[in-house]
Length: 340
Image (cartoon, rainbow, N blue to C red; front, side):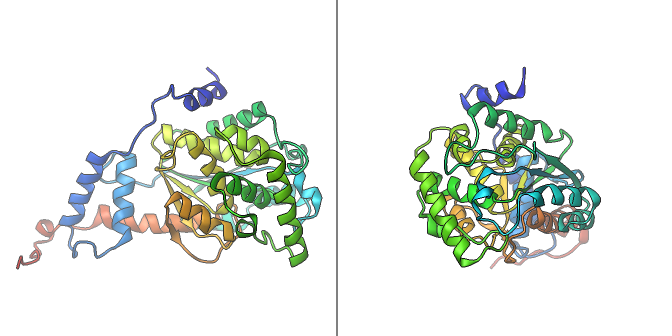
């Protein structure tokens, strides 16, 4: 059976969706109470360890095989002059990734993350979504399939990043349609456009929303109107990871917007995802408010390419090394708290 058909079966509710294992998580929580520290003294690190345990279904979860997938796609909307860089930069940055020269390469080396860069028909950009649908539905499903199949089965933590000139425009349009947010509040400077370009970007996104509307019943439909190939692939990867109970670190604005499209299928479909950082793009905070999710970090990042998620993975490693490696009070022969 092809993965396109499998994705459609998931959307039709014919595939069982794995859930968080509360039994294992409670055992991990009990372990935390026995470690040589005041209960709760490691704050969110404790919560991250318990969350990882529930999804990996291991009292002592691991990060032995983390993968970062960067999907790259070009956008027809870039021809409208709303980006600081020409679309050729997508090609050039893919080569930079492959040659090891980008920020994400250095961060993956530091955090011991396996990196895969997946260009998606860069010589064939999506159509200009301010004039027509960006993709046909079958194209969306095809790129979702590519993302679905890209997730390695031995992965125990997945990072999803992207590269695509003008994809902040797609992310803004998707987010406005999904959450009924004003365009002005969801649209930022992307890679560094000026005030005139930002005003033009807002007008173009508004015209696209008037053209395609804001009411959608499934992920493929909204991605067909406003999405990019890399955005569809990220959505497919999120589904794949959920079916394998692999925890996911979403990078920033674009990755989160891509994943958010899946909430049209199932509200809790992103329970296995953590938000790695709060992007400097203004729309990201508003997405997170709608999703009721908090970022791990807030470093004023807006680079994309998985950089925030790779950085946040170091925090998760800290959570697990303390959870898994500390002695219990009994093992260390340390007296426990005196009950008053």
